[in-house]
Image (cartoon, rainbow, N blue to C red; front, side, top):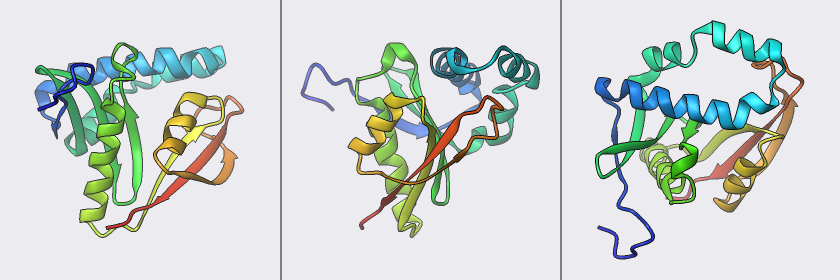
Length: 164
């Protein structure tokens, strides 16, 4: 339990099927606030027609972990082996320590699985996430074209050595 009144109590637990709508709302929020302003109209239309994020949640939801504050789902993280595929916190809940708690949880899970080096990606336009990952001790390892969005983005690969 938190003693600092500015930092809420954050509980992290495995995703459940009844979290589907809350996680979809989080992914929609972060898409609208982070990605949509950067996408070409063609890429935005293709995303909307693709059925994402519903397909992603349907396929990978059981591998997600969610953060809750007072019973409300306020963030999610998804990693496999050494790679963090997703970390999302809606705008209204950012800067409350939720993303930091989710990343610490994911890194602990990777360490428990014997992973020595964590990896993740973000894009060059996403300066907020770059600053966040650098503050957590990640370092840039590579840059390459982002082929997912077909919008001319450049992806940054970040890595972090996980000490036991």
